[in-house]
Image (cartoon, rainbow, N blue to C red; front, side, top):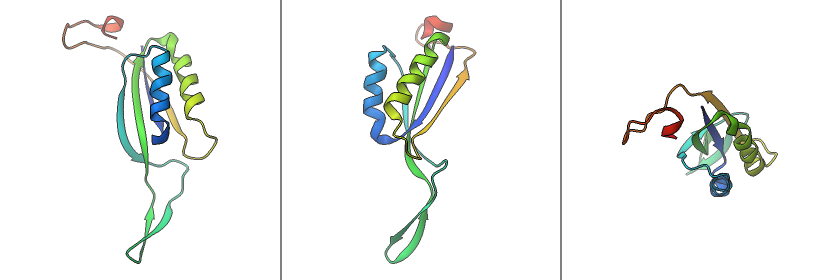
Length: 112
């Protein structure tokens, strides 16, 4: 099993959720986050004072899947979220040791 984390543009979240639903990805967790990668800080002015904005709003999507689904999910994320511009985000894939469904005590893939 694997855990996939994708940091994406907020404007792409609804389209990504719909595309993942078509793949029958049932569960995911979504967070509003702030961050930066290759994006440079921007100078903005507020009440006449200059401020450098170097963290940008992003959305972090986390999901867990069976190993053979990883490449399909990555392809969907790339297809939906890539604009070709700096700031499109990143995808991280982690090995997952164990899953336990709290309600039933099921473990492993049965808990997916």
